[in-house]
Image (spheres, helix red, strand yellow):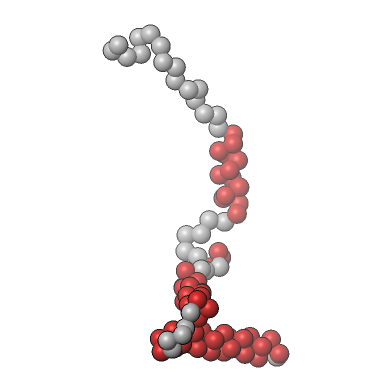
Length: 92
């Protein structure tokens, strides 16, 4: 019961801090780096939930077993030896 209350309080407090910084940047002539950093950081965090999804729910997500198989297959293959330049390899 206490966790949701604490979480909501933190969200409301950080949201109020962000709005304070944005409004201060817009209307106060003495606003500076601190307000700009708070506003930019809050804006950047607002984009995070849109682009991040748990792997289990992501469309087309590759499971850990497929990554493991791909790495093993890549290690097992050997690359062809490098080509040597020599007589008869070109028009010169």
